[in-house]
Amino acid sequence: MSHGYHEGLPGYTPQQILHAGCAECEARAREHSHGLAHLDQHRFAYAWQRAAQWRSGTGNLPDLDQAEIPLLEMLWSVQIQLERFGIPIGMLPMSPVAGQDIRRLLVEDGQI
Image (tube, rainbow, N blue to C red; front, side, top):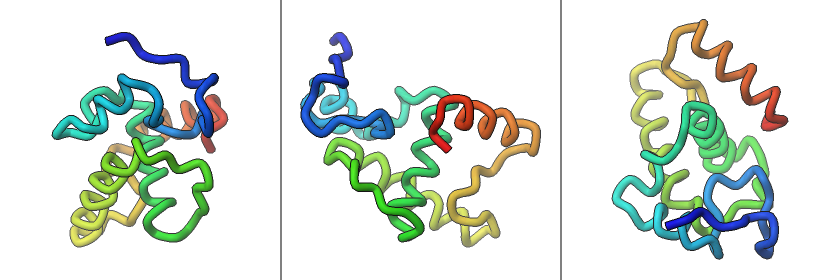
């Protein structure tokens, strides 16, 4: 399946991880992993932050798409479990060096 052209779809914003109206995004959302296996390191870190922002109430996501919800819910659930082990919501459990690399990528991409 080829990935659709998101920019021409109604309601699309670049911040969305998956977008309804794109057949491949919709198929990924229906997978048992809800599209998680298709994310690269950069998009995973961004989705992790987006899930925390959405569910913790620390940010408004007016561009939240229905196709993203299963993935973000799953990531939020993992964050709740990790918080019980002392990892703050929204923080990825990783080495400081890896964290700096991810933050740099997100900044360069204009995501944060």
